[in-house]
Image (cartoon, rainbow, N blue to C red; front, side, top):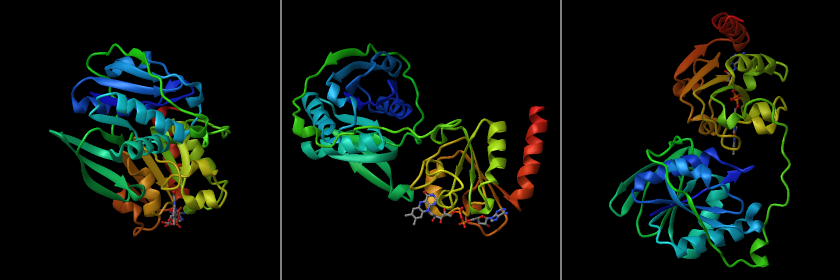
Length: 318
Ligand SMILES: Cc1cc2nc3c(=O)[nH]c(=O)nc-3n(C[C@H](O)[C@H](O)[C@H](O)COP(=O)(O)OP(=O)(O)OC[C@H]3O[C@@H](n4cnc5c(N)ncnc54)[C@H](O)[C@@H]3O)c2cc1C
């Protein structure tokens, strides 16, 4: 049996958890899910989930990694799961690593590739922010694995599961909630979120000013995309920090990433390496981004972008 730890945001199953559920079918055998706090079992049916182990402790509705790790450890211990899968999110990695430490179980985070060979799982892990890939093997039981949601597309099962809910009680005391999220202050979200946008337009130092980003906004509007920036753009105050793409910013995985006036530093590239196509616009033929881009345009972005916008408008008839 494979057990999938699933996460919800604002009541909805996260897309990252949908990826983790899709991966679970690779291990064969029934798929069970475990959820903490409020959870909707119905949405798990299309992923072939037979049973939902639900820890209905309201205190777990807000992020409390110590308590959640202990709860997950208890749920796994009570089941005969050979494999436990979750999406490689900051929260799931923290919770599963705590559970693994409590159970002295093997744990591999941020896996980008997986293959099952009998009792051994061969995997590739993205480490150091994705600048290195590590080949590893997990043996023993249970094996705890988190998967990079950008590396595995959500895919529904061929046959739906019953998603029968089984209430599970765990022993938690107040001391387990010593670290608990108290409040979340949401930034102003305008337009499409960077992390899930299918088209992303990024601007770097080459943009030259905050005002210059308006042309990227115009292009993003035409292509139904989102605008992001390099760390230079955010450090200069041209974009808010939440728009930063890279190791210390958002990881994007669009169909098309148009990088404008961005040199292609490794810390930037680890944030956009999952883009299906990278189009680089840069005036320096030696810029490292050209080595990673699928398409490159050599020239001044202040001339190229207006021309590109005109062409897009013609194609769209606007
Ligand atoms: C620990 C750490 C974490 C980091 N995290 C991140 C991160 O998350 N994200 C990130 O982006 N960076 C990050 N950085 C910074 C990173 O190393 C680079 O400094 C940064 O990405 C460079 O930004 P840039 O490409 O905009 O600027 P530059 O490297 O200065 O490149 C500007 C580019 O614009 C081109 N250009 C200039 N004018 C024009 C024009 N008119 N037309 C066309 N092209 C033009 C130039 O040829 C050049 O290639 C991190 C660094 C460290 C040490």
